[in-house]
Length: 376
Image (cartoon, rainbow, N blue to C red; front, side, top):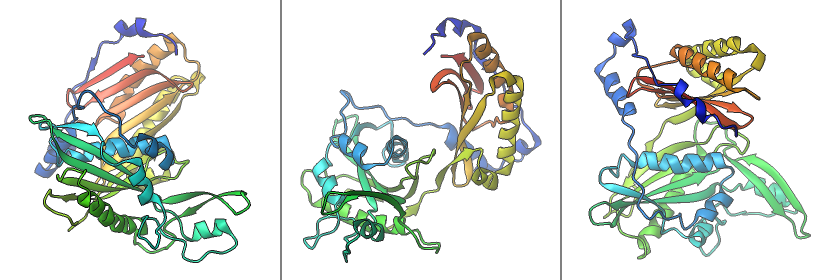
């Protein structure tokens, strides 16, 4: 990566006070409360010395790509703040669910009751078709621990159950020949999410196994279902549902749906969901491309929506072989044109990328009401 730190003095933080439009004045009390909750970013302190999840190797083998691994780990931690306060608890990677236990859960059901994935009820001479007919659904179980800062004891567990939307098949026959393929788990055209329903049934057994094992502390458990995206998707999967089990409870009484989704720009899905935001991003894209036609910048992004409302914008500007002077100008233009897509309460991160390496960054901080731009 090119060393550009010598140029940092050229970029003091750019302070831009967001103006109030007529639409802002009509913001309701509920919207103000919602905006406040977005601005408040709660982050756990990690218990030191930091420990690696004892099943770390398992998650790498079980989940289909790094995108889903990062999302389930970060997402579980972010969802846990609603139950385990960042002021009261340290966060620690899971120290109880061992690879052996996770492996048993991921195996197919047997007559002895081992395994939580569907059994192949009737076998044929075609092993690949058998796998397609009875796809594996459960892909991983992730654990995080929450430690009381005062007594240094584990007083909370969070569990994410990862589920396949698509089952990537790799199976061998009796002669050792390997067959590969893929099948969608939920093949029905109804409005019922079979993956989610299967996850809820699996969760009962996982909770039962944890509660009856004396090794696990008898503490409250936050439990959520995560559905992986396809292996070649450029956005991660989604969290489907959540529940909370008090320390003196062994059963799940109620589930709550989670509506947090990522959308890619440009995409038909984003256009259908939020045409106004899509058009703003399109204007921003055209302004940047128009200012640096000779670099032919490629602009793409990922937006997060929670309960149908935009909460986060991440954009990438790809400019291969950009030189130092061009980078200065590009960061300056981006800092100016960010007003096209700026909202008071939504954080924006724009990365400038040269051949897969970050060379510059522009940030809109909704809390400080500032735009920061700097080469890297």
